[in-house]
Image 1 (spheres, helix red, strand yellow):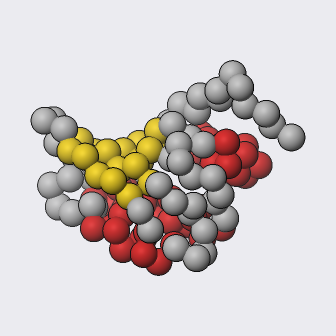
Image 2 (cartoon, rainbow, N blue to C red):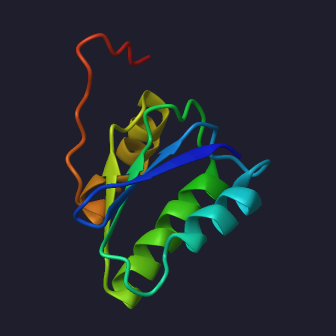
Length: 111
């Protein structure tokens, strides 16, 4: 699993996920992302732009992170949703659950 984390001056941690969110790497991705859910965390942003495939394991991980954010009192924001993520969110009507704006690129070719 490849993820790149960057913390800004306001204590916001932005993590760019550079792999697919599938059963094949969900466990390592889970360990990495839950490691960022420590006490004192204020906001965790996940950049999903490089996610080319997401399955139920990846979706469960996003749902777990949302639950952890609510439980631990920090904000989870999903940013730059990839086409694969948008398709799953639309299929399962999850956009409103996560509450983050989903921007559909002009060059998106939905089949």
